[in-house]
Length: 411
Image (tube, helix red, strand yellow):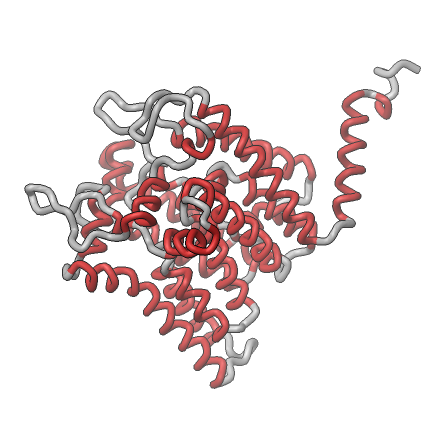
């Protein structure tokens, strides 16, 4: 019998059998080794993508052509965080001739650069090395915590595949650059884990730190309020003791305080009540009007009718996903978080290319995707599509290519 006639000996079958054998061996390793290996391989892939795209990078506002890896990942918002690390925040909001706030560091939360500054004092390592190192390690810790969170709702295999989807997600290269995303993902995952395991008082300091890493405090406080209402409504099936009611309420109060902390700090430091909100609108060039940016973007892309229909269709899709049978299996805590965060984005986000990056806090949907099918073909194909998406994201959005009117699409 020839090799072509015997599928067991064909190259494709040999590769498939070897892969299955490797996966069976991997399944016998400790869970933290499996998760760490998945994340490490994903970050090595992203490293390769960054290096390949950097070779094609021309001169940019941050430096010369063909930068090295550390210089290449230190652009865009990384440069803002480095400025905060070196100079702190301005004592007043810079404004143009029309009185509108100009782009300035108050749009970026303090925890990540403050952590790097503290570690610099301890180790002597400089920003260019320390910042991406801390971001990558925070990403490692985040996937470990998220795996434990997912194991509350799924078996080890499904939870691990969900981690694969997070690790290779098209915007996942952001987890190894000097952005606050990986640190925020760690604190958000830990906060949701503590809520899901009903350790509400332990969650308070974690939530407060999360609120100082990125603007996720408002949707988290909203999700917690919805969770308390849900527990009250279902107290017959899931009793809510007075002591637990108090603990949830205290966490809710702390979450609200944390959500307000950064705007209040900006107000205190600058003497301007709207220091933070004015700074946030500097990037969009218009005042902050809830929901209107989605209508404006829909109108720009699809016309007046599309301006109304496009946001409604996106909202309907979100409702269908979160109320579907598969999503019900991930627990009410994760579903309410996703609903609150999506509501927050629909209310305040100015949709643009950076919207892709802002999808990362919806990481519980990775578990929904892993639960959708146990088919290996489906899971491998989805992971492969995400890996291809990384190439598109880094090439299209991370690398700088000045547009005819000036500037470039932000990642």
